[in-house]
Length: 190
Image (tube, one colour):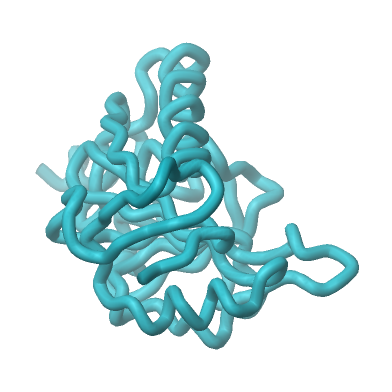
């Protein structure tokens, strides 16, 4: 058994990286373009506590040039080893992260980069692990949404404050099991 746990970080990546990453990328971009839309992704089996969807997002969007912050219980040896092996991404604190992953209450929102007036794109994207991801709850309006959409969010005030920063602000990807949804900074949460 010790040999299996010593090599566990070698497993859980995409078995067929090019087509699986392309499929995951399409799902992530579709979710970003249509806030509130829930997409399924497959192919990643990261170590607990990461969900397959969070693993797929990391495998698709992060590499050796992408600083990643692990928050709360996501900051554990199996996840750190998995990220180092599969992504080569440097692990960092929240203030230097391009991506962060963790549960809502573990993510220090006020410590992540929100971009600058010259470079609003230099902000963090937070991958928020949730127990529930449904097309109900908060009402969403804005680009990519015809009339309104709904999404189960952990709260609404933080997303309203984030929207008020536009064109600066954070972008969010919510993950639950093998599903994901996105909330870009352009989205108004009612």
